[in-house]
Image (cartoon, rainbow over all chains, first blue to last red):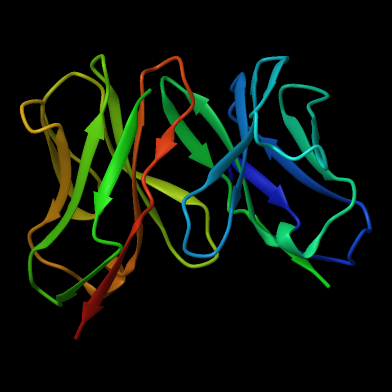
Length: 110
Length: 112
């Protein structure tokens, strides 16, 4: 029944070592989002897609990139993770203004 | 630009007591408003939404919220708190063609 799936749920990477987080959806929604959420904070929007139209927020670091090869899959690439990038990363889809969130990937940077 | 303010970063209630989480919004046009709940190490789950239909909106788990345009508020209530309601709650707003803007969140604790 899973609708928005994120893999892995927990990811540990080393300082400076590239890492990729994955998101897939079975809802066939055109709109997808990536958020970063640090402890006790609200989710912060990094990127969003309206179908293939890609938008990154003005304050999203250049270190972060995203790919969406098709409607179902979306990836978040962190080229050189720093300690400050440790966070929960949430993927979401949207239909009729309602967002559907995945369970998140908790990233630890050592 | 639209925004939401959640009053109180932490609310503590006794089990069985009324839950009231406050949210005020700012928007130049009628907004769409949402309440999400987040349990530890989980994603966000939609509790309820206001999309310009009925002003009193009923959601899951016994929660409801009332849209009050005159007060620019969308407070979340539940008549009787349960231990399982302990979580982080986020109010959010969109104009429909813009990404969601979240409040800073309110952590609800329920005391036995």
